[in-house]
Length: 189
Image (cartoon, rainbow, N blue to C red; front, side, top):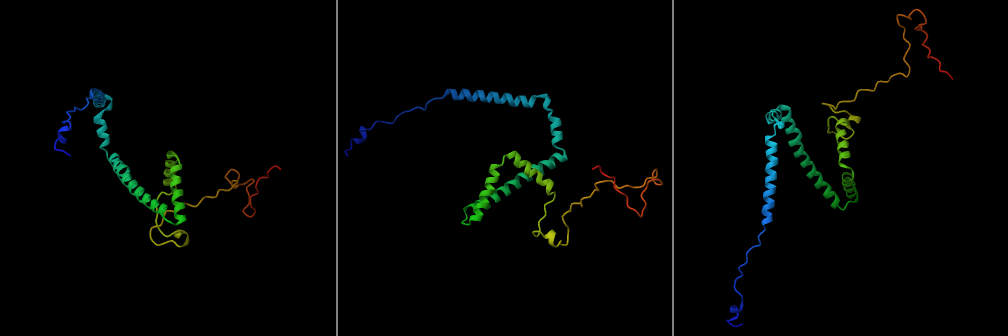
């Protein structure tokens, strides 16, 4: 190439960026509407901010915030990430049983509507009031020493018919004798 080749090239282009005035108009309108909403929240007398702050600083509310929200969120994140990693490893394994279990678990939680799932999970607290960890079927085979899970009280068996008992009004007449059991009333046939 010759030395005159750079002279054939055009000079620098002095381009100006395209202006977008309507972007600034839209931004201004959105900022005004947002400022109006914030002003409405802050200056509305029905909010009663002093009472709201008084309620929010009570012990049950703060304990609920700590236990229910913060601990619950961190616990759910840890359980979710842990189970997600385990399920992903099971899904990638060569073992068909592990693959099927991972698929079924994933399918179950994807297929069930969220509110139904919440009601199922919410009722687990009623069914299992205190979680216990131990030997599988250990409470059936041999109880371990130490604190035991609370057992349900035995079911009371109520008789189908009330027993005839002598009362002071009928103790002399028509009361069954101790040697003879009370006969049950006859049913019409």
